[in-house]
Amino acid sequence: MEDGDLSTAREGEAAGAGRVRVPTLKTPAALTGYSVTAVSRALKDAPDISSEAKERVRSAARQIGYRPNRAGLRLRTGKTQVISLILNTDEEIMGLTSMMINGISDRLRGSNYHLVVTPYTGADDPLDPVRYVVETHSADGVILSRTEPNDRRVAFLASSGLPFATHGRTDMGFEHPWHDYGNERFAFDAVAALARAGARRIGLVGRPPQLTCSGHMRKGFARAIEAFGLDSHLIEDVTIEDGLETMQLAMTDVFRSPRRPDGIVSGAGSSAIAIVAAIEAARLVVGLDVHVAAKQSTPVLEWFRPSLHGFNEDFRAAGRDLADFVLRAIAGEYPKSLQRLAYASPAANRPGTT
Image (cartoon, rainbow, N blue to C red; front, side, top):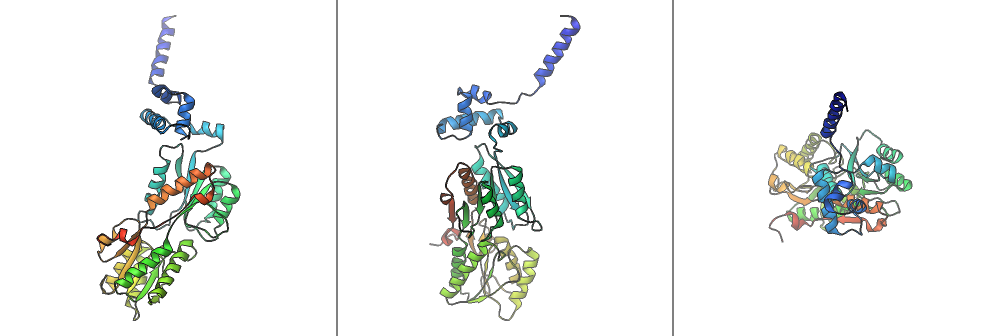
């Protein structure tokens, strides 16, 4: 070999030595002693692979930074290994969005699936992002929130055959996977707590009326008003999805009215904070002149005002359920077994109660 050829070869070797090698399935296979097929099946959470072997393979994969080649995987299997969370960015968050995403990520961790958030705003047609995911085959499963009793998105997904789960129920005459919070029971228990505190004229600030959860909450509220012989004060000008400033201004007018309520049930923790500001702007005292009960995603309301009655909704657990239900739906499990109605009892929300 001439000197020039040798120099070129060395340069090539040096370049090759500096090139980053992307780990393949053979790498964790060599580290663990398992076959490539066994490693592949362990990473797919196959039921015939032991838990010990799965953890060993996943640990090796994490150490070397192995990631499946998703483009190649899609070509081989037709699967994207993606779960799409279709999310309205106008949603009242108060920790809701991040906690749900954390829960979904909890469940997907260790699987071949990863999460992609597909956002839309209130100005958009909510069916558009769903149609996009289905028509572009950009996900193997979908998670929806803000369900309505007769939801066009659910009907579209059901007809498409794409597995999905909803945060909230529908009333469409067929089974599908869902996780929901017991809003009817929450409203009943919240009114009961306010009645025990001495409130006799109670108002409800809930979600927009077209949402399924709003109907459930109103039903529980009406049952409790009747059961405890109370008066209801209809609040229809605002919902918990209005801005906090709008909420405060509207509720200040409510509390300054001659027949003001002496109790309020709020469907969200952030709205409860605006309601407290309105009570105090009307020169009233929270827990004395007006009692407040609210659903919250984190147990902070009692820190903010100890007299508030908080009812926790665990959005992280909801996210775990929804991701689990979608994965099981992808595997072909029957929808009726992929449904959960969750609720935390009032005693769990108020330290020192029995």
